[in-house]
Every structure is written in C-alpha cells, then in structure tokens.
Length: 479
Image (cartoon, rainbow, N blue to C red; front, side, top):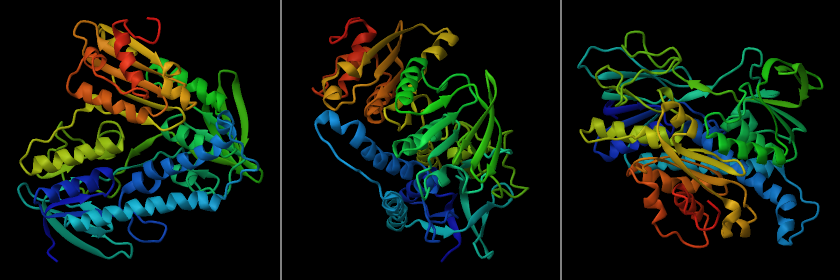
C-alpha cells in the first residue's frame, strides 16, 4: 500500500468522514485517520456524533418517548396499557445496534469510494512550505507509521468540558457518553447545563421515571434561541417534570454512599441537592491535544480552536481545518458541509457554506428548531423587522396527533420582506425548519412562502400561516 496520498483527513466524525468521501468522489487519493473505539474494541468510524452523540441520543429519545406515550398520550386515543415495563438491557441494546449499523455503514462507504482508513491517533508533522505534509499515526499498541499527502484536513472534533469540582468518574459523575449507558434508571438525576445535551438526555431519563433536576448558570432559559420560543419550551418542559433551576451555579459535587451531594448557589443563597447520578453537560471544547507538532505553523486561538479563514484554511499551505475544531457552532451538519466545501476547494471547484442559514435543533418533546436571527439580535442591531406567528393549536394535523403545543415564528425585514429568521417549537419542527432554510438560502421573502401551496392537513401549514401572519393576513387566527 502506498503511503502517499492527495488528501489525509484526521478525524472520522461528521466533518472528517464526509470530507474524505467527497475528496475521493472528486478523484483524489484519500486517507482518513481515526482512533475512536467501539464497545467491541474495534475501530468505530463516525466520531462523537455516531458513537456517543447525535445518533444514540436520538435512539434513546425515541424509545423513551414510546414508553412515555403509554401513560401520557395513549389514554387520549382510547388505548390503555397496564403494567408496562422496560427491559433496560434491550432499551440500551437497541441503541447500540443502531450505532454499530451506522458506524459500519461508514466503513462500507469508505470501501465503495476507495478511502483508506487508518486506525490510530493522527498528528500533523512540520514541513517546509510547498513540501508534502506528513501525518504520524500512533496505533493503540504504541506502534507508529507515517503517511504523507499534498493536503491535510484537520477534523479532530470536540470533547466534553469537565468541571474541576465535578470530575467525570464514568459511574456517578458522567458526560454525555456515560448518560447513554446507565445500567438502571436513576431515581434522582442531576444535570448541570440546560443546553441541548442536558435537555435531551434529561428528557430521556425523565420519561423513564427519573426525578430530573437541571442546574443552569445563566439567568435566561435557552438564551441562544428566540425568547418567545424559549418561554414556550420552558413551560412544556416544566409540565413534563423537568425541574430547571436558572441562575444557579454549581460549587461542589461530592460522591458519597447515598449519592452525589451537590452544593449550588442561586438567588436565595446556597442550596443542597442529593442525586444518584450527575450528568455534567456544560458544553464542549475543541479537541486538539496531540494533533499538531510544534513546528507545523498551525495556530490555535484562546479556546484551543484551530484558527482558519473563511475558507477553512489555516494559513499553512495545504492544511485545512473543519468541524468542531474550528470557529462556529458545534453542529454535525455544519461540519459536514465544511468537509464538502474544503474537498471541493482542494479539487479546484467552488465550495460554499452559508453560516447564516445553519439550522439548530433540540430533539426534545416538543422539538425546538431555528435558523437565522432572533428578534433580540435584530432589535439590538437596529434592523427594521416584522413578525408573524402561528400556533400548532390551530393546525388540524397537530390536534389530531394530540401534539398541538407550540408555534412557528417568522421574522422578515420590514422593508424588503426578506426572511431573516424562523423559530419554532412544536411537533416535527426538526423537519419543518428545512423549508425555511431553503427559502432563506434563496433570499426568499415571507410572501414567497405565503404564496406556496401547502398540503392539508399537515404540520407544514403552520409555516404557511406564520408567513401569512407577517403581513397580518393569516387565515386561521386573528391577526
């Protein structure tokens, strides 16, 4: 096997494996280096997302939702089930099977596209300008080999942030990976951080019967989302039994015989809480440890992220970086599109990523999704705007599904009517947001969406009516 490639990708997460496949599609001889290990001890492509993130969490969210529906949704439909029980081994095992299916699927895609996969930790070595770039691969047994390429794409991803006073032990205090593999349903689950991971995994175990307390340091719930949408979501989560404590800062976590003892401070002063398990989900940081030799010339910023320009280039000839390891939102789809764009730039084509239309989704129940600017951002920037809203309570399909909670909020420029942001909470909004992203990508107006025929009865009618509402002409609500 030749050790000289056109492109070497370090990292096989959603950014890296997509970059590798696209580069290979473009006729570039491509290698991908990754050290992630599955439960069977073998290489597991797909990074955090496929192994311990996006995919397994959605599997558990779906399974837990089925269980929750038995008691909280089925009776409305006239369906009664007595003494429903969960086999937790099967519950977790289903998730594991799905993960293995998809990680194995990437391996098959690599073979089909002739991407060479290397199992080990990759390090970019220093080189002179214009020379080929070398990557040192360290296998699990410590053995090393070096491969080289004209271009190297750094896609090393991110890792959970650990609190110095609540260190992960893999048993009592866990990160997202640990919360996916509990061997029993914790009676009391503490969650630090009311972000995406905290809300999603908190929802999983709440549905399974845990008493879930979420401690969030910020004073506002989901401050990154539109305030109206965040308020509606918070109300529904509270109804489901998620106890979310805002403006509360964790000071200490001690593991004792009867559980994890937490000390936190809120507006009323110091508080105490005892839980059986503690999930720390305060965010993630770029993973660049051991990635770069000292003389590569690649720079890191104050947060440990790889410094890149608008084309994901590091400033070092032939070295690029994408995904969670660089600036921008830590989202799988953002990283994937950067991977495609970089592969195309390397091949001399026109790559493109529009960061203004990247959709955000939280897969709770109800789901939360948005793209573009919030009302506050536009107000602070002095941009004139107009708003249209429409509730799912007035959507026939949502009511028939018994999932009529939430609304769609559309924001358009007051003068041009160009859509500036769309924000949703409700059933299936992870899918509905795509229509709005397409409209925004093509610089569409609210009138454009208002004049498009939407099938009836569907959830998408909420988007249609919100667009009509921007100009105060929604049909099925008072304007």
